[in-house]
Amino acid sequence: MRIPTEEYVKWRDAVFKRDKSICQNPNCTFCGNKKGVPIDPHHIKPMSIYPELEFDVDNGITYCKEFHLKSGLHKGISKVRGFREFKI
Ligand SMILES: [Zn+2]
Ligand SMILES: [Zn+2]
Image (cartoon, rainbow, N blue to C red):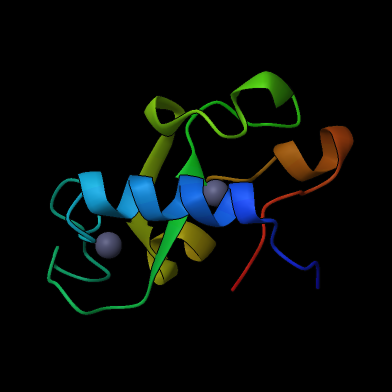
């Protein structure tokens, strides 16, 4: 596991704050869009393809951990140039 950089932590916190720490998947079947479930920040445009958007808050979205891991959002991405998102 990587050590998250300060820049990453700032980006993540800004994304969580903007989304009020609630999963942004509409009518999420994993978390029911409730507060207090484990959440992850996700890059809308994969940073393996758009590395310049890595710390762009507009490119971040909050999802619950379950949706983030199980929805297949990262399918194909990891094969392109490596799965670079941090898990904390
Ligand atoms: Zn993600
Ligand atoms: Zn969710």
